[in-house]
Each structure stands twice: as structure tokens, then as C-alpha cells.
Length: 80
Image (cartoon, rainbow, N blue to C red; front, top):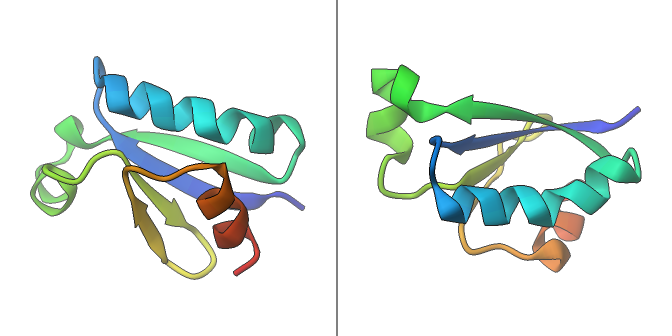
């Protein structure tokens, strides 16, 4: 079963688009599922992640990766 990840970002965020591109090979290989959350729609998320996006959260453990992250960092996160 694929591991659930959450990517926090906003629309029109070029760094968020880069983060999505890093995640695509893992999704294509069915290693994970990624839920995209727009923090602009939630004041508490905007406060928490506003200056850090994109932020990747590992669902099972709650571990987060702040940008910049690469495929090696994502692979390590999926091993948690």
C-alpha cells in the first residue's frame, strides 16, 4: 500500500511546482500518494507553513521536510 504524504503549498508557487516534480516519480512507481493542500485556504496552516512552503509531511510519522528537498531526501522519508 502506498505511503501517504501531504504537500503543503499555494497556487502559483514555482517552488511548489518543483516539489511536485520531485514527487512524481515516486507516485508513478506507486511508492506514495500525495495530497496537495493549499495553505491559503486555512489560516492556521498559513500561520504554520506560510514562510516554509513547500513542506512535505509524512503521514504515518508526521515528519516534515521543508524545501529544498530532493529525490534522495524523499526516498529516505519513505523509509521511515
